[in-house]
Image (cartoon, rainbow, N blue to C red; front, top):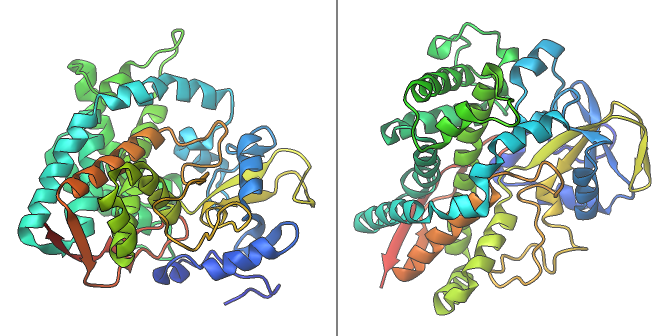
Amino acid sequence: MDDKTGQPNVTDGELYLSGIPHDRFTEMRATPGLVWHPYSDGGFWAVTRHGDVKTVSKNADTYSSAIRHTNLWDLEADALDARRSLIDTDAPDHTRLRRLIATSFTPKNIRRWENTVRQIAVTLLDAFIEKGRGDWVAEVAAPLPIQVILTMMGVPLEDADYLVELSNFLVEGTGEQQSLPADAFGNTTELGLLPFNSPASHALFEYGEKIGELRRKDPQDDLVTSLVQAEEQGDRLNGVEYRNLFHLLIFAGNETTRTALSHGAVALADFGDQWQRVLDDPALIEQASEEILRWSTPVLHMRRTTSKPTTLAGTEIGPGQKVVLWYASANRDEDVFTAPTKFDVGRQDNPHVAFGGGGPHTCLGAFLARLEVNVLLEEMVKRNIRLTRMSDPRRTPSNFVHGILEVEMKVEHR
């Protein structure tokens, strides 16, 4: 339902149970200037066009990630301090934190994990082929990225299902209701002090602290050891910074790629002619991967707050106002993408913003996500796999993560 101003509502999580409300975003992009979107604590400026998203993303001095957080809703100062991670900081804190961990995510260092990614993908695909059908999310899309990031971090793979479960509860925290009681997992912390307002964050914090302590005593060649030993000119992560980074890496390293792989499979099944193009010409794999990322847009939005008066798209914005970047809308911008509503594995010009719109907050794990999608497609092509969708996707009621909880697929290979 549209709000009382006559503008489309795009924050109701229930809307996303039927997919991204692209018709509403199309209407917003066509509206001159920016659209003011009411919200529970006032409202925000909705940034829906591709060029405007990139402008905001690259101007971190004016559009802050640290002022009152990157959620749609505001946080009190104590909650902000407790929950602040890399994505909720500005320079110089952001520069410092990113520098402490960025080395682990350079293309050179990510490439050394390619064989690991491939082994995991092969094991999952071959098991799925042997069954013939099943839930693609549970059996391929979810286990692939979580097993990869856990291997990189040095976390036992037998804990993968538990950490996926925690991630599911975190996504649930972006919706209107949570199924967990406040004291789940032994939590005694006020929910407002926890990321996603979820007791699952307490469980993830505890888990990360346990692994971190093990690595302080017994360092290994893994990412958790790098985090506890990370040092830049004598500077190290403090306890809150470490636990929030661990939380971010588990959630982002699992949830976003899982979402891309889930929507990618649905698209390849629904648009069989496009998958046939890839089977006929494997040189299209990288372009197909980029199109899957554009099509899926795993993270739907991110919020900024103005640090000073500014003007964007002809709209005057006062200091301290919320500005929300809708990546899902920017990735369908008619002025940037030819036939944006078409899933096209051969798309030549594809400047999607699935990893953000550029600037200092560009996704640190972008190269890893691309590697995982590429490798899975490569192994699917090798096996001449064809997917048939046997159920409608069961989606997450979230305006933040474009998640699929379950989708039944039948597989054939020739």
